[in-house]
Length: 110
Image (cartoon, rainbow, N blue to C red; front, side, top):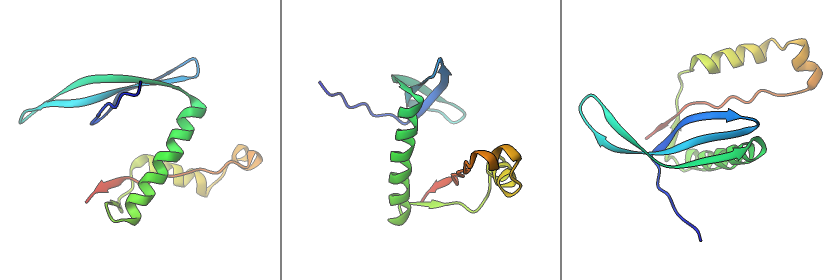
């Protein structure tokens, strides 16, 4: 049996013993100064599964960017700036492993 769950977002992200867990949430009420969130489900996945999910979602985001549905912003978040700084001046451990840093730019709905 397959169930479809609509979610407005995720919350309560944690990792324990190699399993990443997060809640799927819906915004049920929006007041002037607050909103009410309701958990509608939970997801638990291994780190390799999370990486595969990340790759799939990145592909979807890239298609949305190509179609003009979402746009990349020009402002950098502090995390992006620090990752780019670290990438510009690689440490000995970065060069010895040959690992590359991937920077995801923030997206804004058009």
